[in-house]
Figure (cartoon, one colour):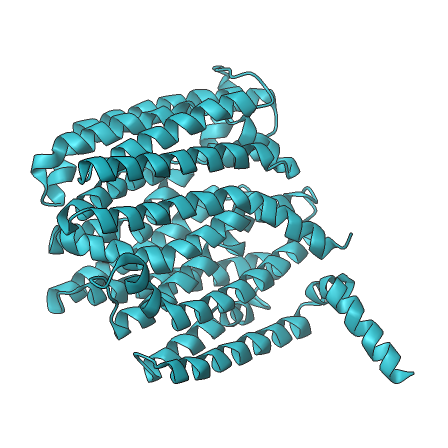
Amino acid sequence: MTPLRVWAERGLLGGLAPIVVYGSRFASNIILSRLLAPDEFGTAVAISVVLGIGGLTTDVALDRFVMINASPRALSTAHLVAAVNGIFLAGVLVLGAPVAAGIFGVSNFAASFALAAGVSAVGAFAHLGIKQIQRNYNYGREAVAQVTANVLGTLGLLVAATAFHNHRAIIVGIGLQSATYVLLSHVLAPSSYRFSYDKEMLFRALSFGLPLTLNGIGLAASSQLDRVLVGSWFGVKELGLYAVIIAMSVIPASLILNVFSNPSLSFLLSKGEDVAARRERYQLLLTFYSLVTGLYACWMVLTLDVLIPLIFGPSFTISASAHVLLVLIACLRLQRAGAPTSLLLASGRTKQLAMLNLSAGSGLLVAAACVAVWPNLEAILVGIAIGELASCTIFFTTLGKAVTRGRHAVADLVSAVAVPAVMAAALAWKPYPTWDTRGMLLLIGMLAVLAQLSLELYRNSSFRSVVARSSIGRGLQGYFAATER
C-alpha cells in the first residue's frame, strides 16, 4: 500500500467524527433558522457563542496532552483537571448569565443562559482514553461516540424546536449530545476511568496546557468575539444573519482543520524527535494545506452567494463585499491553523502558539474603528480580515526562520495565500456573478490551483517523492515509458 493511500485512509477515518460534529452544527443552524423567529434564532446563537467562548478560553488541550504523553498517569491526571476545569467554567457562566444576556440585549432570557451553562458541565466527565489511543491512529472509538452523540443531539434539537418554537431548543440539543458522548466514552474506553493527584504529572499537564488558555483567548477573539460585537452593536436579529454567513464560509474551514488536525499531529510525531524528519514532514503539510486551501477558495467563490439563501431561506443573503472578505478570512484562518499550528503542538511550543494566535485578535480593534465610521457587518469583516492577514504573516515568517532558517519563509507565505488572493480578486472584479461568469471563475481557479501544484512539485522534493510513489505517479511513469518505446 502506498504512503499516499495509507494517509488518505487514516485521514478519512480520523476525519469522520469532525465531519459529523460540524455537520450536526450546520444542520442545527438550518433547523433553528427555519423553525424559529429571527429574534429567537439570534438568542439561540448568542447562547452557543457564550458557551463557545467559555470553552475556548479554558481549553488546556488535555486531548492533545494525553496523545503526546501516553501513560496511564497522564490520563488519570487529565481526568482530574478536566473535571475541575468544567465545574469551574459552569459556575462562572451561571453566575455571569445575567451579564451575558444583557450584552446581547436579551436580559429577560438570563435563566436560559444559566441553564445552558449548567448542562454543558456534563461534558467535563468524558473519558479521555478514547482520545489517547488516537496517537496510534485508532480513531474508531472516538468516531462512534461523536457520531452517535451528535446525531442524537441534532434529533433532540429538532424535536424541541418543533415543540417549543423558541431558543430553548438549543439547550435540549446540547444536553442530549453531551450526556450521550460522556456515556459512550466510558463504555468504549480501553481503560477504567480514574482520577489521580500526581504532582509531577499535574505540573506537566498544566505546563503544557495553561499557556493555551492564552491561545484559547486568541481563538475566541478571532472566532467568537466578533459575534459578541455583532449582537451587542446590532442586536440578536443581525447576529442570526451573521451566524448564517459564517456557518457557510468559516465553519467549513474549521471542519477541514478538525478532520486533518489529529492525523497532522500524528504525522509529525511519528518520527519521534528527529528534527530533520519533522522539518521534511512540516514542508509536506504546508504543501497539503496550501492545495486544500486553494480548492476551498474556489468552492467559496463559486457557491457561497447561491447556497446561503438556498439552504437557510431567501431572507438570508450576502453582499458582494462580504463575499470577497469571507473568502480571505476563511482561507487565511485555514492556513494559520493548519501546518504551523500542528508543528507548534508537536514541538510542545504552546506558549509561542498562544502568543501567535492572540495576534489574530488585533483585527477586532480594527473592526471596532471601522464600525464607528461604517456601521454594518462588512466593517467587522474588514477588521477580521486584516487581523487574519497579520497573524498568518507572523506565523509563517516566525516558523520559517525556526524551521528553515528563513530560506523559504516568504515563499511558504506566498504559496499559502496565492490562490485565495487570486480568487478574491477575480470575484471583486466580477461581483454578483452570472452562471456564465462562474464558468470563467472556475477556469481561473483551476488554473491557479494547477499553477500552485506545479510550483510545489518544483520546490518540494519530498512532495515529488510522495507523488511519484502514488498510483497516479506510477501510472504517469508507465505512460511516458511506453511512449518512449
